[in-house]
Image (cartoon, rainbow, N blue to C red):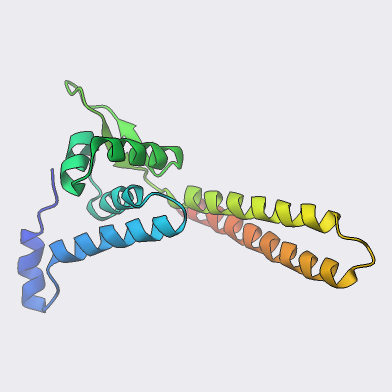
Length: 168
């Protein structure tokens, strides 16, 4: 079932709000750009944005038609989003194609993914720090502060993930 903004548009027009179909399309594109800036293919971000906005289970074919992209692009996008535990594959009795839906609370896993990336960066900084000549105290001090920055970020993201998971 596709999003039908007609009912919302009638209420929105009377309040001077923007057309909800436009708001939806802009949001889907924004999420595509957000995730692209994090190294995720833009189409995967657009798929995620569609699930966030609509909140409905969608068939593989619906995603292809709705986002007007190839089957291969949707296949790659859904695999990435499943791997990141943002969406999940669900079955429908009597249906041969795959269906997908948003994970109920994907945000703790999103934060854990970010924290893991920052932790890898910190490990690389620590590796460089261990190779600095002890006489080079200036570089050692700067790199130690840089590593600490990443450590603090990881701790904050881990705490936020736990908080989000606890509050569902």
